[in-house]
Length: 177
Image (cartoon, rainbow, N blue to C red):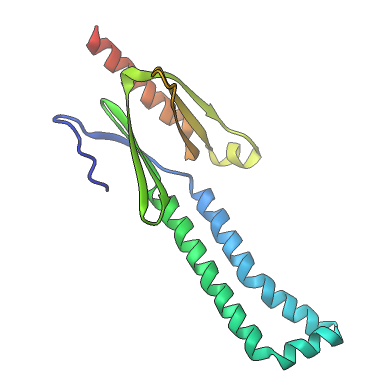
């Protein structure tokens, strides 16, 4: 866990991450990128595309080299996307929401939103898969002058997250009165 610099008496109530289905999509895209060149080579030799088959046999070493470079780029893509998936997180505490967004491998943005600044929380679950697996987008609008918005896509169980944020918001409002 990231060093959050929590205030005295403040602890993390909920850790909100993206749904595992997002990572499954990244794995699928990467696997497809690995398999497509193999399928193309198989089709060329199976159905005897003679001009292309000659190129494949004559430049086999060069094509293997480019395929291995392609695999390296796919691995880098998968690593970057997995890192962003794993490190994008919201921490809900008694007093605020801490949004940690991994922008790139060595670039992270950490934002705070106090519960007294929350104006509205909306969730959007769109599609059959999102409904079946209980994930969706969540947006928290603030009452600040710049009317900024905290958002996270493909959150696990967004209705539960909204209920916890509202319950903490209501506790914060009651303590102010």
